[in-house]
Image (cartoon, rainbow, N blue to C red; front, side, top):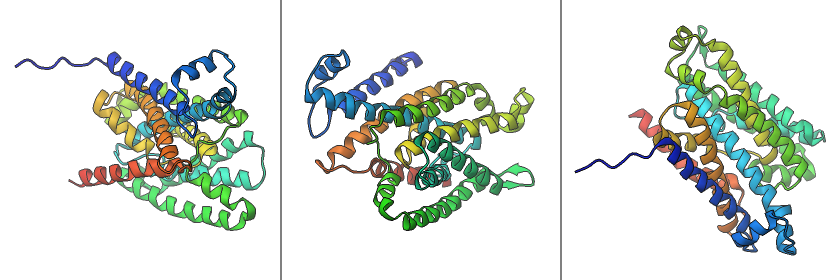
Length: 329
């Protein structure tokens, strides 16, 4: 019996890219008004489609673009944290980084600061959380990776309490903050999307440039040092880049959990552990998963809409439990 021919990396990238394109069109087409792909293409070409054209270009296209970039940011950051910490349970949500970004963004929101500064506050919150979690996990100058996960859970609890405090003093803004914290791609302000996407893409490019160093760090910090990597500098750069991407994502959409946990594992099964391939593959797949989750959030209780964070949590929480059980074995 002959072995089945193996699918090459290029073919796999092509497949997940086609899935992303289909997810993008589905995200634009699905809603209270169904819009066929032909009309979407015509709208992109500048044809006047009346009300449907305005729905496509003014409401659903910005939402789909935001979902695409946020999915890339969260999944790529998940690859970084799992690789650096050599822990399959690490991701921005579990480590408390998303909550730190949410606290920073909420401070800016409650202080009525201009939106162009909110990603900066979210970045400060996320990087401060990374530093605190990192310090809590140190013992004798060495990072204890198992302790970092526990430190992240502790920070999550503390930051959640802070968010409750902010909600209790926010007055008329309470409902908006609560809904935002559950994750929402409904932001249609093009300026908001452009600013947050610029921060995310900058962080993503920085992450993608470090694929080789992340490969060596994943083998062990001592081995990476002997192979010529400035380990501490690389770790600081990767932590900062990932925190910037996550902070910008949270500032635009609120907390969307588990994308950074589920997608890297799925892509690691398909592509292997080479981060030079795994990071861009996870970015593509993360965008697809977030766009499809957004479609599900609009369909489950239509015409009402679920927060997208609820959908991703329903996918990610059982997966987290599976990983936890497997790691115990």
